[in-house]
Image (tube, rainbow, N blue to C red; front, side, top):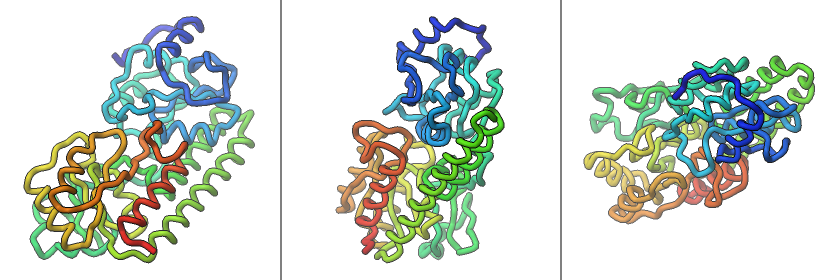
Length: 333
């Protein structure tokens, strides 16, 4: 795994695609594999990166995703076939720190253009708690051992390290889009004008989305929301909310009994009504906590992939569904 592989033929690459490597773009023939088209061939690590590549590249790109729809991206293991696919591509677009096997494979790949979205905006450290309001529980001794307070007095756990979930903040995602657009312009200068135009359009869409969140969450009864997976720290900080996660940055980690008890007490104190879970990970923990605390459950989608269960067909539609879910949970008018 993750070793350099020799150049393979177009026939072999087409067979690789037929075996299930997901092609997202409608901009090229269905049978074409990465590196085997007359377009700018981009391998994207997972859906948020593929969405950027398709929106910015438009008709000039052929985009292939390493992560299948419905597959939890944190769990991805790169196959030898996918390693070969990388070698045949013009560019690789990924988010370092989210998928270790992808980081390793791209690092060892000879692909000429490697675009790390984590370098195109600023990353922060988030643990099970992240947000932008003053911590009402600081006096309870939570700011001890592994915690640090921000300028608002709100504590942040540092157990999770740098949080890669930047795409859930439309402002940060727009910053990444601008960087991807510039990288495409440099790597494929013949279509630079179209890449600039498409990037500007996407940034405009994300700016509008940011305004919808800001307006839609402005008048609310509570700032606190509970999730199973600490994916929404950037979104929380952007709009002055506080995310309390049952687990940390790893969606599969199990919470301690003490953490569950703490969340139950917090829900009562902060007027929390809802425990959010996501579509790609089991909802068992969320429903157990909600049942014990007398709370509702709902979906807050971290947009790591689009499936039939998603509340929308693309990034913007699912983010708008997330906004509606948050408005309901937070009592926003």
